[in-house]
Length: 296
Image 1 (cartoon, rainbow, N blue to C red):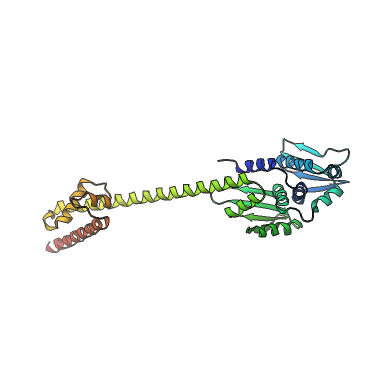
Image 2 (cartoon, rainbow, N blue to C red):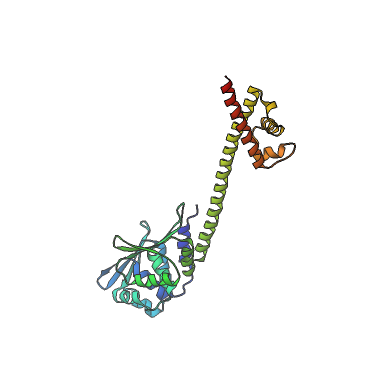
């Protein structure tokens, strides 16, 4: 199966920057951070996110970059073995940047939030998108407002000092992905939905065919036993020509379905007519056996 999440991160990394301040503020709103003197250490547990943030920093004005990056220190420490990075930001700039701008472009900001704490899941059944925000953050109200404005329904719950937003509907997930500009990922999800639907329909048809074949075999076995009963008790002359023809045709074609049996007769009839004749023959044999028992 395709690694959808890896392809999603790749698309996010290479996405053109539309509003660097808004997206950068979104990342800082949710990424773990701790104060260390006059700087703040921001922990990113994905190197791809660190690379995206560096791309955003590069798109900011030179003056803003000087305000963010600590003087005389390494802005970015990579730990490739653990697959994570540590960003160093001046404390004053960190506090300001998290709330700037006050009215950011909603999807650019949302993209940063999702990049910092979001994930996608594609299990055997269903589709899931989650965002796990640090509990008590002001970003929760803004996030909820964006989802409402997009007509997206999300389940919200508190878990381990975090507020988790869970979006389960495929249509809602595609809406969010498209809003963030992750068009390729949204198309992949829609393609998966089509393939799943086709696979599900094929399985239903296969199961239905298997069930029908099983019913045909059981019906044929019962009808062959009726034919054997006619032979055993020499009752052929006591039934109508139509019933006799159906019985003889079944003996010649033991695996045919009722519909096929009806078309093989000298005067083709429908499946329901064949079924009626077998019921009539079964009733006759049942009555004949009762009469035979009484005579004995």
